[in-house]
Image (cartoon, rainbow, N blue to C red):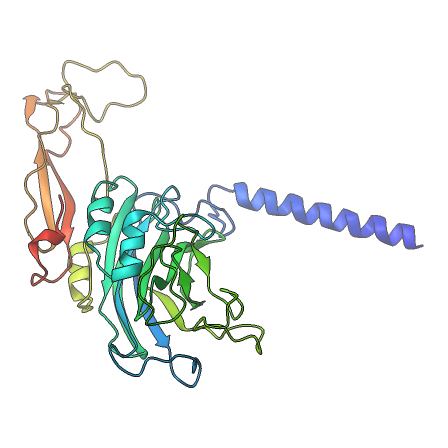
Length: 359
């Protein structure tokens, strides 16, 4: 009897698996369990990031810095990117720009390094400084189907080289864009300074260590500001929340809709929404399959180069054109569109320093 029930159960499981496989392969259903359903090209997703810090004397009484300087947080520096980029990694050495930011809060070195990696980055965001140990800050950013991961860093001030951050968090989960998610954050050690307390002098670690999560027992030293051997886990020192605001596709007027979203900390959108390669030779469009082009069809030239962006700050447009080489004759195919438009520029406020824009 038990054997019969087991066989029946296995049969039901097999039927369910087969059904799931059929559902996932249905080209019309667009099942949400498909790993690629939120990685389709031409989709632009607008997110809000909100950082809430909870560094207080009640939660972290040991060595709590009362003054010179009082506890606060640097600006937050982050970006959306593809799977090949890592801002930092636990158990790996920090890059020199990351180490500089963790030690000083200065972002110039990171800016210069990331400007050379625009092929893997999509959007950049910066949250304002939080002037106290407890506070909040927010900004907005774009992601798309090819750039679904988000990373960021915020320096703990004062500290030798401690920071909070997120490494390559994927906003695409089980084939869908996350609507809202909150993640607890714990202090991290960049591994470049050997100070144990918030106000320690910066003694370079030689050789350089690895990026590590600071815990109630790491560093294992009674002088460490986060050393609380009487508890098992440190409470989170901050939380970050990602909220999806809007999802656009090729058929939406992204420019007008993005202007209506009044989030002042918007950052640059460097990549185009609808990327198409330009052919170097004259092209014939509107032909079907492998049909031989007719001498009656309209023929057009290759695309021109892109015009300058219509805005130096703000989300603008740029165009490219092509001309008619041969007009349509009776019975031939019509001419394709002669003008193409792309989104360009940034929704960042115009008051930001010019060095921010790196085209």
